[in-house]
Length: 608
Image 1 (tube, one colour):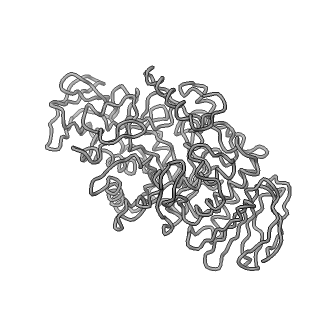
Image 2 (tube, one colour):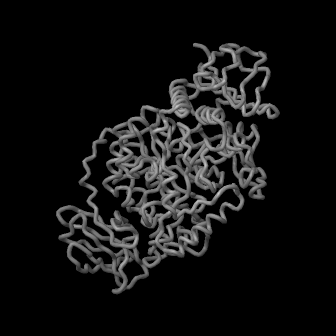
Image 3 (tube, helix red, strand yellow):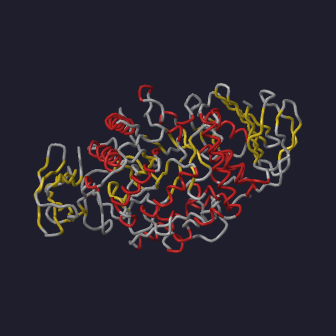
């Protein structure tokens, strides 16, 4: 069921809103001339009317029971924020130039996560466009945009959105996002949009006045859960399925990243996620290109990505936190919070080979058994990272990896990420070692809510990173501190790190053993005492052998590569990468005694 205001052309507009419990609903036209349009209710609780003399730009709200005006829950644009009237949008007026666009396959993606407000000084969609050519030349072929659904104020991570269909006004609204997507496609870059289907933000959320969008049956960290399986849940399921299709159809988005699906509760016979996958698959067939769904999940549950014919939800891929946690603890030595579950080289080796480190083992942090076996799943079903908005921004001081470890360790992290048989995600600025923090920021207008956010964030930090001064989320300075220092990418060590990332991406795209994201043709072994990890991957005749040293000291060891015919392709300790100089040979033989530099990696490949 289509919901919201759908402009039909020639001054005609169809209004549909789900409000099953209301006795009377009307469209209140706010401007250009104020008048009321009565609506009729169908058997499913949808109120509808088709009106004449409604042009794009018309402002409207819904009048409930003759006395309360509220914005449209499925508003396509909130030009004056979350509390004011909605605007009619004509999606047909965009002159798209991407008719030949066929998308980037998931297994080929190099994803770059960015936050619109802090990626450029202007903080808008259109300000991103001039940087696309450089991102593409660097090697990025997919940008993942943090949520853009209308949130209160002008600065927010985006997870406090209250209008999932409305594009944030301070970023440039619907027109700005469409221009960015169209430009990205012209640069052969896919666009992934982060969407939130597990909760509404607290400010400007009037949905409960329309219908039972939420349920008391389950709780999430953000309050009541969305109603996906209780009475009248059909309208809620339709609301979010329509939202997903809306982004693909009206904005030409290539993939959706679904935030925290572990907080999407559904005990029905057909899980909401499975129904969503089915509807998106049908749309993919209709438009003739693959549209992707990527889940963020804290469950380590292989059912998220297993085909629905095999009892799964059928999502295309999911984020794998275990890779991040394994790598982060080896590089930083941190053991607080969930990091206490990690810290061994053998865990990173398992992340390479099986994806989930916890596949029904006991988790000391969770104090229970956790996870399932994902070893049979292809590598392109897992998105991995060394940093992302959560892992940086949920630290009290918002420190990036560049603030926590040495330059050598940053290079080692790049190698560990881009030599893995999974889909890599870079967090904006990571490629050149951005040192500005990425802090949590909001601009709520409700003083009580601001107080609650401040107290809530302090409580979240109780188990993590206690040193330093707490940064006020409401402060303008907190937001401005989080903006990229983009000019650094061409300076000194920042330039060198960026060149290393670029070179690794090129190797990944040209060496068959790296290009094929096949976990079955992979061996990962460790020397835990020496903190060495050995990674061997192959595809037909192509083979690579990589040695990663997480030790802070030189390590002397005896090499045991699979064959005798290896040529060095990359050594992060070489002077060209601002290292102290390589001690590893150009050709690698079996049973050869070697010394590898601290926190470095060396990549060998079979000779042609």
